[in-house]
Image (cartoon, rainbow, N blue to C red; front, side, top):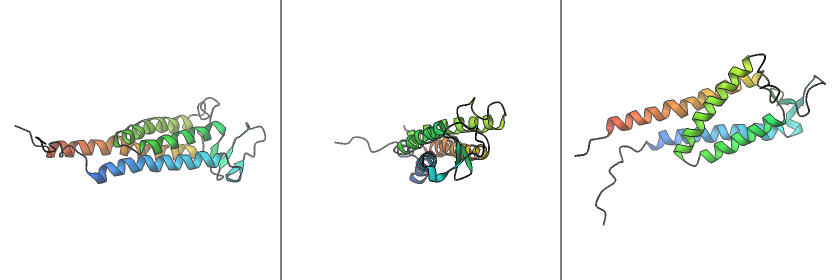
Length: 161
């Protein structure tokens, strides 16, 4: 026998709000999974004009500088985004960590002495704006949107007596 009806329905986020957070993780995950996989396919990578560049270095779609390590990171982030899509809390955590790391990547890409992450992976060129744009999207869905949901649910919650 049920003694209590679902008392915390006011605390549940609206379906569209939680869906948008989850779908942002899915979208970012798919984007980086596709970019990471494309980096390993020679047809999608334009080789560098500099013959002294490291093996695996090139430009995905002729636009984004990449190397093997960068591609692997893209695949890992993509798979993580797909996995985070399965729950609201996972999507929020993914978006928050993604926003912080990719904002840091954009800032490091602007600095001449760190624009290759100390020789590991290219953060320069068009990667700067890609990292900044995706970090801004993740910031909104990781920090701003959950706060809006929390504020709206706390203002509609009725104190129980």
